[in-house]
Amino acid sequence: CALLDESVLNREKTDDGWHTWQQDPLQAHFFGTLNAGEELWERIREQLKLPAPDVAVLTCLCRTLQLGFTGQYRSQDDERREDVIRALTARVPAFTFAQDAPVVVRAPGYRAGRTMYWLSWVAGIVTLAGLWCVLSSVLADQVARLTGQG
Image (cartoon, rainbow, N blue to C red):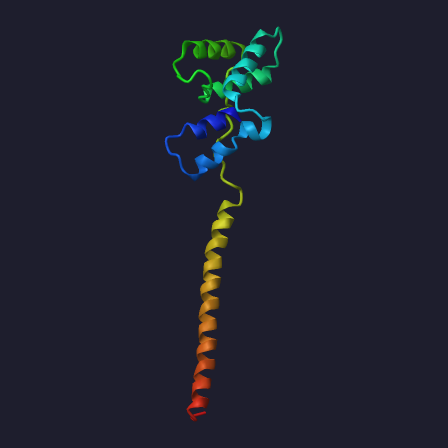
């Protein structure tokens, strides 16, 4: 919540979305506080002091900082912030990505979907042409009756 609040509220553009977010930031909505910029750092310090902290919690905190959360350390280059990031990074397993699994996978029915797309267009055009012929014939009959030719 703190990262998202900070990201939205530190934007240069202050539009309606910004004003709405400022009135009810996530940290206030879910945790009843407007002090996440300091509380998150306190939680990080507490976790680093534990003899055997939960690695998942440390990983979450580390990734939050790596994504740009600054909180009370407004400058990205603040040495205290960098020290904490180094301490967390040392205790968190490195981010790994399995290269054997592709990132983008084409759906198995992709080609069938493309064929169905074009078939639906052809069916629509044929239906429209048939409807045109029927309605044209009906209209011609109606005009002939009205003019006394039929």
